[in-house]
Image (tube, rainbow, N blue to C red; front, side, top):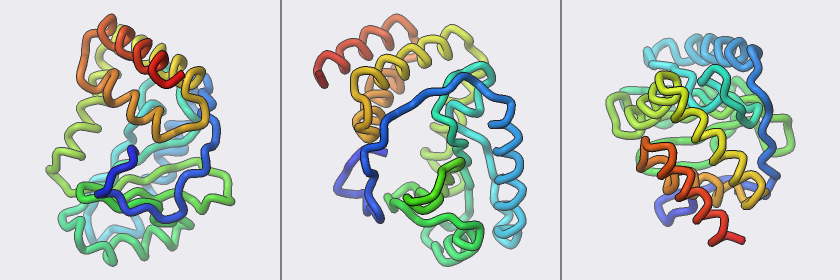
Length: 191
């Protein structure tokens, strides 16, 4: 999540290194466990809970943290989902106009990130379409994996810079060679 004047942070990121792991079947199991727990505590809201991000793409290396997107009807009614998510041991880390970001407290091991967004929003669609594109097009997933490896080496522990670079380098292009060229340029500019 890039820095922006529109983002309100709570317990800002601490610069942990980006460490990528080979794909694991455990990621899907963990996503299903968390999705079920979230579905239970938010049942009154009838949320749509989707496994997104790299751990949702078979065969793709990733940080070993499952990303779940929770789509609700009213994002502004934060009390309706914040307290139930906190009951699962999650804390609100960031609030931005289109999305809220929850995770375990900074001092605890992380296995999940929960992204709450408005049902039908651009934020929801963008993340689902990106995941589905990576699943459907192996050459795009390969290019994305190469970009992630490059950024992990070049940008290291600046996770916000990694996120910005991934979005600017890859988010605007479904053409793998273009994405690779942009990734190299980002790495050179950051060095």
